[in-house]
Length: 281
Ligand code: AMP
Image 1 (cartoon, protein in one colour):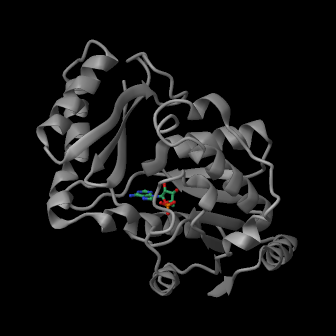
Image 2: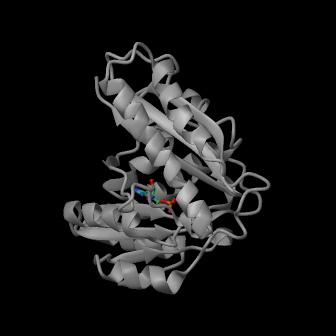
């Protein structure tokens, strides 16, 4: 496994891999890896002959007051985990190598980012789509793997790829959960033992939504209420939003004849957690 930190060197490597007929897969991450990330890596490994994992805590996707400086990092441990997949290249640039001080160009995916996390994290999705566009230009992948854990991010990237004609196949991977249902996340490391218990409310709320849907809910609001009721029972959980939206467009007031996304964002103590599930008609 080779570690590359220079974008120029990464591109030279990618160009020679492409010239020799290799299929390049990219799995973008912010590091502090867990089993969810490794599941993406294994999917990438299955579908590519050169697998690149990027580790980059992207400053432009953190809003003022968010956890950029204290975001958990452990490069040594990440590399040891990536070696088990195995990954061929770890691309780990410094922020200064990715953004020149005078950079002013942004990629924005439009309406798909206007709801759900959009209003709560101003500038976040613009940072995500911009860095992913840059990673695509630097790594030149044939395919890139993203988790459904960040469902709105996945939809924003799919939109960007279509709108800007990126020749990259986007491979989605379902959410990987702990045994008790908590969606795996690097931010789970922030949780105290008591908060870890409270955090279960998110997956339990999604389960309640699923049961309400299966029992024949009349409308999306009824499904949202079923989830909200479970979250409100847990004292340590502050709801940011609970929304049922169209799973393709992320539009409000979805038809129950189509797949719908139930998405939750909530604070457990100081930690912001998200989770979601897609319900089929
Ligand atoms: P992050 O390091 O949090 O930016 O995540 C990197 C990639 O891993 C993103 O595509 C995430 O959606 C994905 N990911 C993170 N946690 C999970 C999980 N529990 N299940 C599936 N994918 C995940």
